[in-house]
Structures are given as structure tokens and as C-alpha cells.
Image 1 (cartoon, one colour):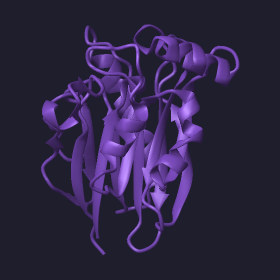
Image 2 (cartoon, one colour; image 1 turned 90 degrees about the horizontal axis):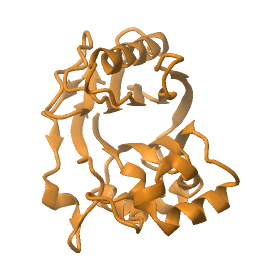
Image 3 (cartoon, one colour; image 1 turned 45 degrees about the vertical axis):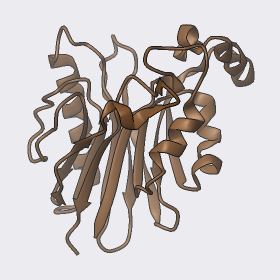
Image 4 (cartoon, one colour; image 1 turned 90 degrees about the vertical axis):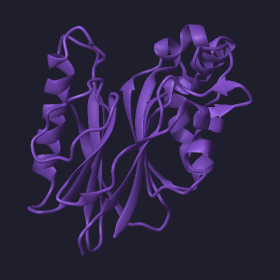
Length: 237
């Protein structure tokens, strides 16, 4: 079975450099244009979780990492007044895994991977059931470039989470914004360049592809300060 997995930190729907306007719907359309099987998203505004099903036509599994301040409609309205200024401060923050329609999927829950002194960072996972089955997990680690030990430790906690979920020999995909170039996870495929990765265990994988800047540019606007990352996973039957 071939599984096209894509991960993208959508930067709260903002552009690079940040602008007043939001581009989240355009980002989702772009990310799904060529029909990936699985799309892992980070840094979504919380209000978007209720719209991803309709926008994408895919099964959506979301987790809130930072709750919005005040009522969601008010927070969204205030944030839209100047997205570049407010971002997640008002609208909150969430991650999501989208799976192509028609694939049976089980939600496996989530856990916190950051320590108690830091902003909560989570990993969450789903299982694509059937034969063969695949566990797909999505994480967003702490941004601490001065101390890469921090995001590496969070990646290790994410691995422990999926280790506890996966059956022996079951294929595992761990994707997301690791905020470190070398997460140093045992048994997974080698990371590509950058800090956004799709790592694979107990399955084959193509070389990771990072989108060039022009591919995420629309009408002169560069969507997000992160590039989408792709990997085609070959799961043994």
C-alpha cells in the first residue's frame, strides 16, 4: 500500500512576511490540490477545527493545544482584524490530522510532550485500520533553538507515545514540526533538511520532499513561514 503523507505548519493562516489578512482556506485548498492520503497540520486557529471537514472532504481529527481567549466567534473576529499582530494570542492554537475519505480510521488520542514549565505541546495519533494498518502521529514541538535538547526530548516522548500504541511490526508515521533538524529517534527513517519532518518506521519511504518557496506562493503572497513536506510511504501487505 502506498500512502502519500504531507505535513505543514500553516502559521495560523498567515503569510511570510506576516500580513493583516488570513489565507488559511487557500492553504488548505493548496495542500489538498494533488490529493494526499494524509495531511498533518500544525498552528491552526482553533475555530478552523469546525470547518476542516467541510473544506477538505476528509475525515478530520483535531486537538487544541492552546485555548482561545474569550468566546470563539469574538476571538476570531478580533484576530481577523490584524492576523499578523494577534495570531494565536486570541484565536488559540490547534493541530489536526486529515485522512482521505473512505479510509476507516480510529482516533488514538493525544498526550502532552512538553514539560510543565513550558507552553503545552502535544502529539496526537490515529490508526488507519484494515490490512495493513498504519499508525500516524502528528506533533508540534517547542521552538527553542538555543537549546535543541528541549525539542529532542519532546520528540522522544512522542516516540514513546506511538510505541505504546503500535502493534509489533505495525507501520508508524511520525510527522509534524519538530523544531529541530535532528530529532535523533531510534528506528525511524532519516530526517530531511529543515525542522519539519515525516519519519517512518517498519515501512518503506521515498526521500522526503520539501516544497520550494514558489510552490506555496499565490498572487505574490508566500503562504506560511514553513514549507509543506511530503513523503510517500510504502506499507508492506
